[in-house]
Each structure stands twice: as structure tokens, then as C-alpha cells.
Image (tube, rainbow, N blue to C red; front, side):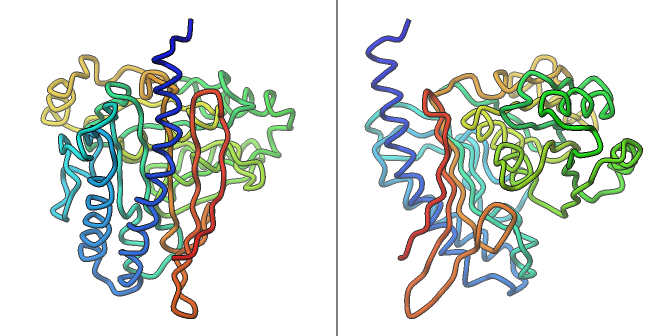
Length: 322
């Protein structure tokens, strides 16, 4: 049964998404002068400060549960940081002011500013370590099993999509650790779409028909997995994951953050427990999902993506001039 409080919270989340659109836009604009300059820490610092300043002006009680990465020495929106005016509902925030810092520093495609927000207590507190991931769009929701082989999953997804297996396009990060996954795709006669960094884009792409990506699979950062899962929760897609602690220190870190069984399968509902959530991204450089920041005639233009959960389960692309 939906209560009046639930409706108020849902309406607040939807309004808050527009405030966070401005946050992502300002972070992208602040980072833009550093595109191709070879200094990712300066870019990250500029994006971080812009995000922090903008979020502190929003009426909310925000808590950063996923920061830029505990292992980085770059400026951070750190885990546990409180943001906002202190008025309004509590929310969890997962953020990366410059996702793809190395790409941006080299002037390459697919860097963006990303934020995921959900009602308080809803987002998984994932430590900065590797995570095995599998993502699909709405038509294949409920058809994936991360414990099964990629071959089995591809057959299941193809059936759900009404395609032959050899018509699938699988997005995989171009890393030696993924050689076996790539070979399984080739053995079924399907297409591989390799990328160098930023797997959040690939996860979102599975839910956008025009991009022609059917699945994302592989191992990448756990914090990025939480952000991607939030996006897919809003878009009606599906996401499964398993944390992959590499040593006792990482295993213990999981337990310290409340993950009593660090190697259990995490469903999208384990990672994002509420539909009162949203995902916002603004391109810094051109990419698969978004165009980058552009300067023309004294104005800056941005291209953003907003997806809101709850009953809406929709998305919009937003072009803005600043």
C-alpha cells in the first residue's frame, strides 16, 4: 500500500533529480578546461569542487556512500561526507565527478560526470575493489544468472529479445582478464563491442534501443557498479554482480562495511533497495551515450542524461546552454 509519505518522497526525488542535473552540468563544465591537458588530478579536483559547491546549496540531507574511490590520492567527495543544507529528506549519494579521468586527460572519448541518488539506506556501500558484473535492458530483465556461463546467459537473453544468438552485441572492457568472455561471444557468432574505460556507459546502453548493445559483462570497479545498477533500476533493466576481494585486507574491508558474505550474488534489488532513485550524467568528452562539453560564441553547451525511478521508469536527454 502506497502511503502519503511515499508519494511525497517520490515527488521530492523527482524534483531533486533536476537539481542534480545542474550539479552534473557544472562538474562537467569545470573539468572541461583540462581535457587533453594530461593532468587528471587537476580535472578531478575542479569537477569535485564544482559538485560539492552545487550540492551544498540543495535542500537535502545528503550522505556520500560511494565516493570517487578510496584508493585515489586525487581530491575526493569522500565516503561519509554530508552534503546539502540539512533541510529535506535524507538521501544516499554515489558520485564520480570525472568518470574516465585518464580518457579525459588524453583528450579521448567517453569521459563524463555521473551521480546516482536514492532515499537514505537504499544504496549498497560497496568498497573500492573489483566487481564481476552483468547488465541488460528491460526486455531481458529476469533472464540473467551471473553464476551461469556467458554462453548460457547469451542464449537466455537472445530468447527474451526475440533475436538469434548471433545477432547479439556484447559490450566488454578490453582487458586480458576478459579474453575467455570474448572467445565465448565469438564462438556463438555474436558481436563484441570493446571499450577501454567507463563501464557505466555500457550498462546504461543496454537499456537504450538506439545504441544497439544487448549485454554488458566483465569485471570492473564496484563503486561504478552501484552507479550503473541505479541507472538500470530507473530504466527497468537488470543487473547482477559479485564482489571480488583480491586479498584478506579487501575481504575484511567488505565485512567492515556490513557485507557479511562478500562473495554472494548481488541482485539489482540488493544494490539499490528503493525505486525512489535517479541517475544523472553529463558528457565531458564525446562518447557512446553523450556528447561532450562544447564552447561556442562565448557560451558553453552540455549534453546530459537523466533517468528517474518510481513509476516513471523513463529517461530524457537534455541539451543546455550556459
